[in-house]
Image (cartoon, rainbow, N blue to C red; front, side, top):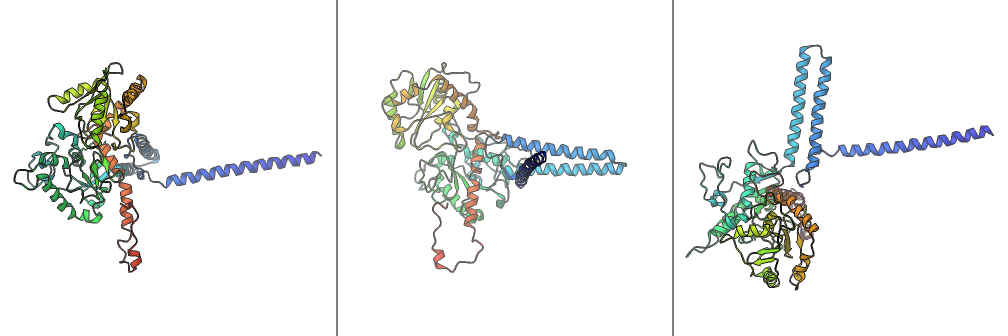
Length: 506
């Protein structure tokens, strides 16, 4: 009987041992596959600069680089203990230097790979800085911006000045001492580029030369657009892709009115889609960029809910056409509310100073559609830390794929806003705690809408470039698909020739 019990015990132990062994083997097998798969993904294949919240990945990779560097130094240092001659020591030092050079080169290559590579046409100055009355010296078509930056006109011109800031950023990327916190680098070979940049100051061209002179059939703005179309369509880069990998700036809603219909395959940088048909410009293909705010940034803002006496603020043109009809409706609904400022205003007669004081003294600032869905008023409100109330159903917002505007803006449908008492009751219902949360968020995100030269990390210039970079992978996919049969002989099958491209192929 005892012998049987002993045999049973051995069987139980054997089963447990086998189960344990099987479990451990399975775990080790799964872990080994995990590390094998992970090792097949090269570190430089991860683009760390496309999103604002990429600091963690960059820090981890930097730590990995430092550990590799320390390991190289320490491993050769240990080997030096065993060296018996001066020649061995010299060989060790040389080998250490070579290893470290390779590590540094690898780090530089990873940084280079993460930048958006931009090929910029050397357009004649009449298309860019010549519009600022800059005169070239010698054969150069670009000013030496290290010593002299042509001034950009103020007033309303500034709100559409992104063409100026982006061009400066591309030029500065070639400097030997260019800031490390950058997003783009200029390349001289267009085949290496992610995007082909067209440095035409189209908004400035519209503002300065759109009005024709007496007895002159064409304005200077139309003539420049015609010249631009002729220039671009003659370039090998345009012919190679049909313009699909080109980047054109048309931030002013009325800029590029003549050329846009011919250059539509390109990616446009716009303020909104209000004056574009959907087949010419759309959110899938193009990039929305912020206006440059005219009101100065509110530095050291120590205000709070109670210290801002005005509940709701609006100052601007009241009677507008198209989508701006809601402005006059709201004017009649709100003009008699005691804690609401709703009046006509412009930048003339000290208008910017008055708007600055008004927005900084207000809890909420109205951003109502005008002739177009967007306006500079939204970005003035952000700079003033005045919580925006957006009443514009067709508005498109900059980098909305990475920023949640509902965290610091209030959105109200136009049909609701123009109902009697709806808007004022809704705004009065937002309490101190919720307003303070949004006010704090405004201060966190405001740098995304600031323009600088040189550009700063995740400022408006870099955020726009990052938005462009996010368009590159789907663009490259479409170009590669389109070029599948580029080297194949012409098809002799009539039926195949008639097969249409997929819907929305471009």
